[in-house]
Length: 158
Ligand SMILES: [Cu+2]
Image (cartoon, rainbow, N blue to C red; front, side):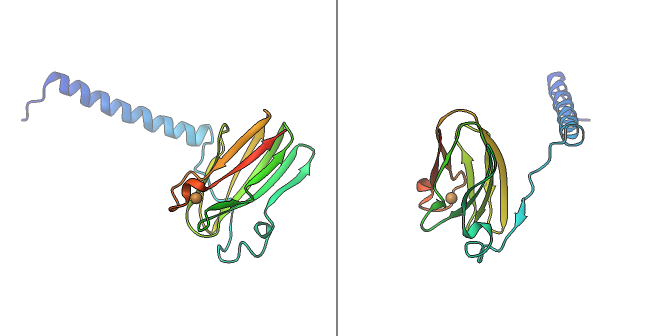
């Protein structure tokens, strides 16, 4: 029989209790509160997405007063978002659809909770309301190559 020090037993007990607490927290979040792993909003062919469909003519579209959708393409070489500039009125709610034509990118809007992974073949979707005026930057939040740091766009809210 191995001798286990009393304090060691307490730490083992505490670790096991924490695992139980975390498992319960994950279960409550998933099954009671409805937190789910994000799913792609759709699938596209990265080879043709820039030529056909809504991503062939990306940008902002107004759906109703104060409600918009924005289609954005992410690409490497040259590293950029298409488009890289959007203008919105204050209070606008925008649903962003973002896809990549080549490698893995990210789409994060500074100062908001919008932050999604952008994968070729998938459409990432995130919705944000811009209550304050000012300039917001959307940046690539996944390292995607040597031009990664140049990958950003601006949203001007007036
Ligand atoms: Cu990128």
